[in-house]
Length: 257
Ligand SMILES: Nc1ncnc2c1ncn2[C@@H]1O[C@H](COP(=O)(O)OP(=O)(O)O)[C@@H](O)[C@H]1O
Ligand SMILES: N[C@@H](CCC(=O)OP(=O)(O)O)C(=O)O
Image 1 (cartoon, rainbow, N blue to C red):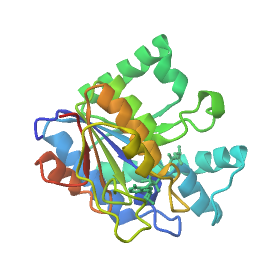
Image 2 (image 1 turned 135 degrees about the horizontal axis):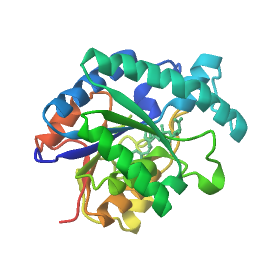
Image 3 (image 1 turned 30 degrees about the vertical axis):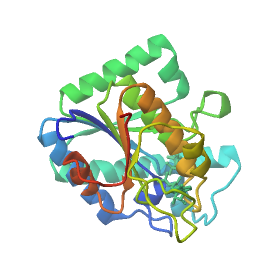
Image 4 (image 1 turned 135 degrees about the vertical axis):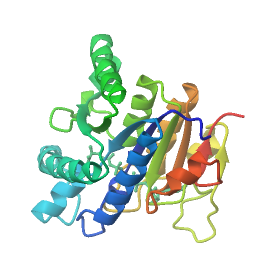
């Protein structure tokens, strides 16, 4: 595992924020430290971050995630700047430069755009910079929106020919049934996304997360087809990333046999 050179890490809203919607600063700082350290080891690190809408909600005092699209876009526009400001501060503590990349489905699927995006990513990585990616919520509505950052992170991993995608969430990995059930058990390895895996992957049970396990499984389908390993692990302890790279049995690994 430790020979993974190019790694995309996706972090969800529920990992970045407290239930109040305010940022979990300790966790973000630790995440910035771990990712900077991995970059110091000579790895290419890309961070796909959610949280713009959640942080915007916290700033403007919204307790429930709104359903109105324009309002969500406005909250993302407020939250995205705050999110980058905090990442900039945290990563600079560890001597790392970061760059913001906001993309949409069109940028991934249209040939010219995707070449431009790829060139930018590669140039940033060549300079040891950590690209921080989110969907461009201001311009992306239904037709051009990927819609959740789990699938976006899989497309970014595919675009960049990454070796590994790590999805950090508020749960240890994929359970054999919705974890609202007490007897649900963690699955440590998935070698094939079949109907059974899709059937046990439900939506989110929190007010902050969006796609739940369903969108993470959609992401796994993309990475598996592209020959990229993927792990879902708990983001409450960013050091889990080291354990994953050491090949420890952490979270759920999605990799064909
Ligand atoms: N089979 C399952 N295994 C694990 N989690 C599941 C499963 N089905 C649904 N979930 C839900 O998915 C949630 C994680 O997704 P989500 O709330 O969108 O978080 P994030 O912000 O990290 O994307 C879990 O907290 C859990 O409620
Ligand atoms: N672009 C949105 C991402 C929404 C999203 O996918 O959220 P999550 O389920 O927390 O990964 C934002 O920054 O709020």
